[in-house]
Image 1: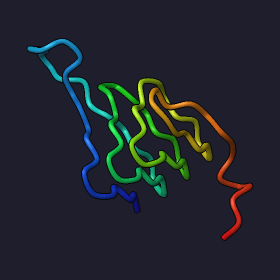
Image 2 (image 1 turned 60 degrees about the vertical axis):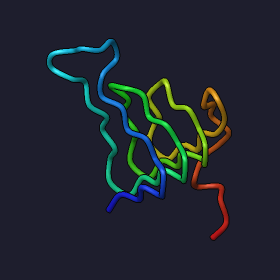
Image 3 (image 1 turned 180 degrees about the vertical axis):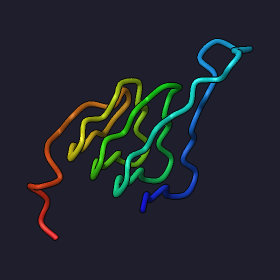
Image 4 (image 1 turned 90 degrees about the vertical axis):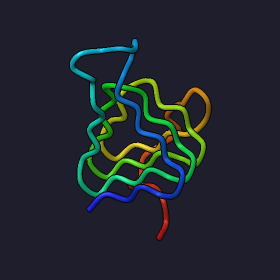
Length: 82
């Protein structure tokens, strides 16, 4: 139950060539919008929302919305109306 929208880039190599590569972790119910880039070793928490085109260089806490380049926190998903 993770949403990865079109053209999301998930990177795994902070300084090529790395051995072993450093993966990205996306917890359940998180959503990563179109064109977002997740850098190596990033952890996206449960129910988090990554905005379209965001460049994520730091971990995203659970239930948090991040947007921009570089990605910055703008609020909680609990405050978004459905």
